[in-house]
Structures are given as C-alpha cells and as structure tokens.
Image 1: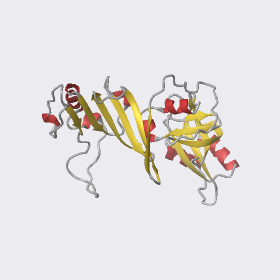
Image 2: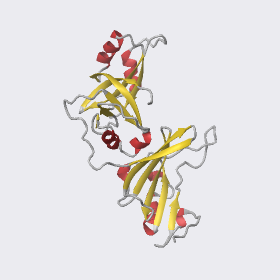
Image 3: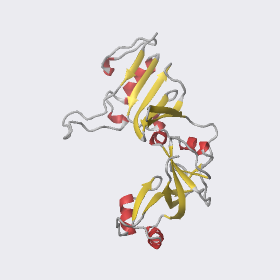
Image 4: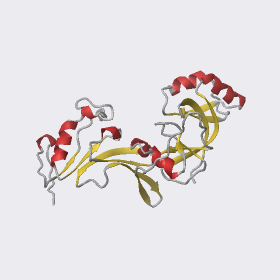
Length: 267
C-alpha cells in the first residue's frame, strides 16, 4: 500500500511505492482584503511550489493528486494524467489532477452536483467517441439552444452535450449547443431560439424596438464583443414595465451572430 504523510511539498521526495496529495498555494501572501482574504491566483506560473515541481513530485510517486484552480485549462493536462473538474449548482469548485495508479481514466471529466431536497446528486460527464461536428458556414441553428453547466464547459466537454441531445455546437469553441428538441438533463440549461440576427447593434436594436423590448440580458462566448458596450449601443429605454429579451452573442458556424432566445423553465 502507498504511504501518505503531511509535509511541505518542496521537501517531498516520494518513492515509487508512495502516494502524494499536493495542494499548492494559490493566494498572494501579505495584505488581505476587507474580508481577510488574500488575492486568489489562477495562472500555473503563480503556484507555490512551482507547477514544474508539482509534476516532478507526482511523476515519482506511485499515485498522486493535486488540487488546482477551476480555471485550469485542459490543454495543460500532462500526458497520462486525469483532469477532473468538480462543481455544484452551476458553480465550478475546483479541478483535481491525478497521476499513476490514482488515474481512473486518462483524459478529462466533469463531476456535476445538483442540490435536491434530500441531498446532492452527482453525475460524471466524459468525452464521447464520435462527437458531432459544430455548425459549418451557412448552416442554421435548430429551434432550441442548450448551455452546458459551467463545470462541463471548464472541462471542454460541450461536444458531450451535443451528442447527448443530438445537437451540434453553434460554432467551433462557442460552448453553446443547438438542437432539434429539448432533452431533460441536469447539466444543461435550455432556451427557445426566437431569431438569429447579425452581430450589429443597429440591426438588433431595430428588431427589439419593433417588438417592444426595453431591456436585455446578454450572454456571450466565442466573440470578442464587449457586452456592456453592446448594451449601450442598443440605446433601449430600460423601463421596468417593458419586456426583457435574452441575447446570446456568439458565432453561428463561422459568422458572428446575435441569437435571440427565450429561457425555458427546468423540466
């Protein structure tokens, strides 16, 4: 059996029979904020001990794991390691990396928790063998749009949602899935697609005003547009008595677009 002990990671020198669990510092030392918290760090280069040292220790041990920021990129996963993101109720909590005999499956996964009246239910999302391709140039989205749980997004597993709902990502890397029908999943939020417009404030403003919308909720991924600036360019009245529209600024195929959607209640 591997041996486990507490120690400063800089002093660790595990043997091939040992196990190691590392929790590198991810906060700046020194002055704290008004709540007594120091600033959290997210870059691998800011870890203490260093990311290189963490990998060296993990590579020597029989089994090893490390707790990292939920913002860890799947592209930085070392070969042969398992990266596992965990989250609950839409919030990503952390990412854990596993090496050696601690690895259950090489690659990435997302562990999604959902609170219920009797506790928290958990499910694991993993990559699919043959992911459906994203929409291509000139292809129109389906009548429904799904947004994956943030934990699934962090793990880069949008294609797994697309496969589960027989849909396709709206464009490469957008993180939004368009589908022909709503599928009841705990790790997706659904919207009905009402219109697809160019990503130009003038065209969107005309569409909204014609239908009496006075306020908007803006969601964005896959385009460099600044949501606050786009909202200002719409020049809506913002009156509380006027209906509110939900805009998804993203790409449809390769085309920057505004998808007007209507949130659907959980099923």
